[in-house]
Length: 599
Image (cartoon, rainbow, N blue to C red):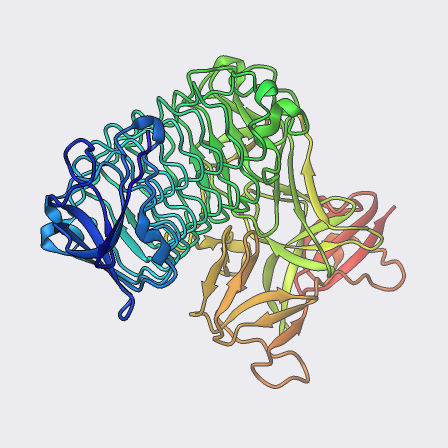
């Protein structure tokens, strides 16, 4: 019940309340606030106000009222620049701080907050809502053990860069929705003692914390949770979020939970995550991973609900959880999940064997790095690169086989001021190579293996800037060259003799710092190459594959040739031990290539 009384007194003060049960207004000691228009200062005191003042009484211990007190000083929100709590105010015992400083947009800091005794406070909701000029906030003296509501407590504190709530203990908390939402500059948030065992509403709790890079919520208890929609939406710099304790037994809203977490690389869910609820009734799983562009895998293997994620077809309504998920994200299903047929990038336990992981089809694309918690085997692998030129370089986590559209080349040697690449039928996994789109081939570079024999193993390895797995050393027939390949972006600035492909030319680094996207491969040798007619150290070189045929038909026997042969290939490009009847492609040791017909 809300009770209001108005009394005219001389001073301009706003009477707060006493700790004792509500009684008609008297001049007894009690908490009140005084606003100084000249300095823009709001001062909180405890005692007996004197003079003439407008007094607003209200009662806040009626829980049906939700603690949303009608504090009279809010009328000074647009004028107030400073808030001071005097030592005398420590004798006040507020029950609610709900909305006390909501939209006080000019306050940069508070003085004497240690004199605000919060041991009886039940409601903290919107206390600092939209205090957009706050740059610091010391709440180390706050007692939060009796509070049930924290909704929007710091919403819109857009200039706070750090918030230490280590002393916050919240055993009775029920609502934390929007608590830190829109604190766009917050870089440090410490909440190690948050007790969330009774919290039902987490929605939007950390939404739009665009600068936050670390967040420790491993201790969070979600057992009472019913709503987590948009909980982390817009946390653009978070790379990891520990959701191993996330329980969805009571959750009815999972919408957009991780949307726009554009730096998030992986998610590993625990045993209590399940999608077995009838979400068709709630319509509440829409696009939880939308625009998570760096999300490499989602691991559901620990879930005790084996059929929790069975609708792996991302186009169906039942699979709303996968709606707008990046195509390159790998999904590990719970052990024992059934009905997996041809789903792309979905890994499951084959025949119930937890150690035998299969993927119907694995898809990857250029500029997307690779990170998996477990190895798996796939019966079809595809890599795609959008091409604007004829040639490129690449390193793949599985073997590549030349085909009618694309031919692979590995670096052979330096000869006559050129870098020579030799045509290769099959390139092993994790081996750098150059590829060339063949004449007449259309579209982008797409590599597929459809052997259907589960013969392609995708290894759980990843190169990172912090932990590079290279260098990759080529076999001896490559003249001692060492090739470096990376799956993720790498900045290389230590190789003066490093080469890479730009457009249709080889470019020498010349000591410049280079940024390479995932799947691209660079080559470097122990010498500088100067093409004919170009000055020493010229920055670019023509790509030459040295496959020119001689004019006419040379009828030769390899044994009688005055020039030693290096390798023989049949008309399909497959290397063979010796020349056979019909057309042969013979690579000579002087670097030339001849077309030979043996009758």
